Length: 280
Image (cartoon, rainbow, N blue to C red):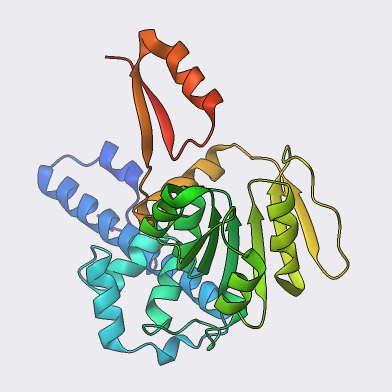
């Protein structure tokens, strides 16, 4: 009997349906697992290099010590394990690139100025945490001392009470060269003052439904948006939630039979966090 083999032949999952011995089946499974790991690591490296490129960072400048530290903090045993995890979608490439390349107190652009500053108008804890995940310096405008305390606990670098403090003065002190971007979750006079603190070429994003809608300004990129739902979006959100170690502040919790009270609490306004309904 002559067995003809190909030099580049590799086992594939279909072989498991035909092999007769447990030893052969074990060897095939081990090979497939190793092949998946290698492919995931290669994919993760390509994705990470793309992220490095967007930040204008040379991957060769990342030290082995930084690789080891980032891998350890991310739950991986080695650099290759971290790359495989990125390839499998367990970590966002942009987040890992930022952690690998940025020294403490240093931004990826090589500066610590306005290009890293985002203003968030409204007590929205998740927006603050996601902005910090992307490496931004966050200037938050909240309502009341308790609102200021909340956004500071969630990571804001500077927070002001819009009813008591001068937003423009505080923003210029925090970012002398102007603010790069504004996320407006509320409208009105406070929003107009936040727009005054944006530098030329800055951006303002706000969800459709903010009233009154901000007026267009020359030199400012105004963007309204709606939520987009889908499998890909929820997968990205899930990874971001995991990487950010997201905390969701709870303002109040009611049993399901007291749902009316929960609506009354919402109607009162100034809700810091989420209101929950307990099913059990």
